[in-house]
Length: 199
Ligand SMILES: Cc1cc2nc3c(=O)[nH]c(=O)nc-3n(C[C@H](O)[C@H](O)[C@H](O)COP(=O)(O)O)c2cc1C
Image (cartoon, rainbow, N blue to C red; front, side, top):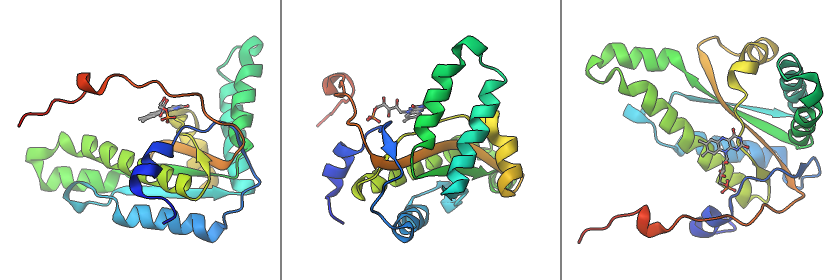
């Protein structure tokens, strides 16, 4: 690890300026994802998170799918801004897709009915932890990433294109690449309003 946990936590940002000129190998990106998926916790150790890594033409195809889906619902006179935004994601090197396996979640709901309302919430929380682990790990490797949610808009086409099991529910998309623009300075709400300590 080239950075300690605290530095990586501070330096992970939403990076919207990304390009395909990455120096990290595909093997390293795969390792980062495997490490996060293996070690990130899940409720009852259910391991319901599923991840798909799209590189090269697969990454480009994803953002073409999103663009065409948006073209159907965004008014024509506003589409140019939408297209620019989608193209900025497509300019990246790859995208990580996050899913939750609803078959596992349903199985737990049946097995532990006392917690049945909690399992979908815990699955979302665990997905968020996976997203954060991968986002921060990509940062450590010198890559910039952001988190996107075109879920309902693209889910059917995504499943069709990459033969994704129907019980995998699409949760988020994380486009990443070589960072080409620094993020704006981040505003922080006072910690005293957000943390209470009793001792
Ligand atoms: C649960 C969650 C959902 C988010 N959804 C989006 C999104 O749909 N599109 C987007 O551009 N950024 C999204 N973000 C990024 C936040 O806007 C961003 O993390 C926040 O403004 C803080 O900036 P930073 O990531 O640079 O620290 C999301 C972040 C979180 C944690």
